[in-house]
Image (tube, rainbow, N blue to C red; front, side, top):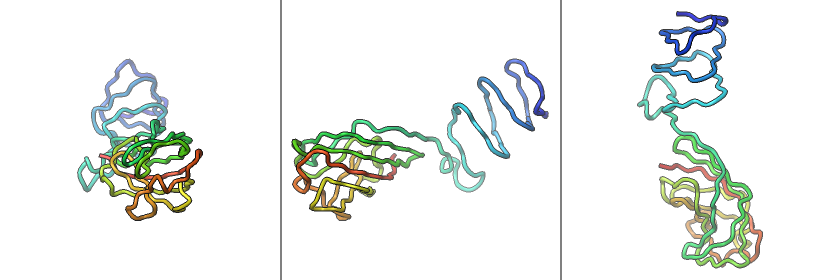
Length: 197
């Protein structure tokens, strides 16, 4: 069966087999496809698609390994600054966003901390990330800017579970509270990509 561009109007819930559409198909409502859909050209969607995932490539590998079944983006709320032993500092979230594609999370944080009256004991940690890290303590983060410490001008960081452990450099030494400036309005910008389960 072939439906031409000006092919007319079809009744409610029509059923077709082996349909070829030349031109543009526009519909208002739901469309159910109970088999494979092959598109030779561009697909433009203005609205929502509900699916079990998008499979890339026709050959090689399992269907599971080629299926994109998760995409999410949004703002991160509830970020906290805590000590590795105890305590916390007040956090202002200037900007905190994430994009999750499959099992990879990309996040960007711009935070302001108040170290003028905190009770942090131990190393500085940024907690309550939106997704837990699948490779505990194995993924680095990028500190783009910081005014936390004048002792260590270049900071690093590691992802552990659902928090970022700030480090004095690329080594495993944590950034101690004693190495931070004792005042308000201390800022940090962080970028990270990590795998979640």
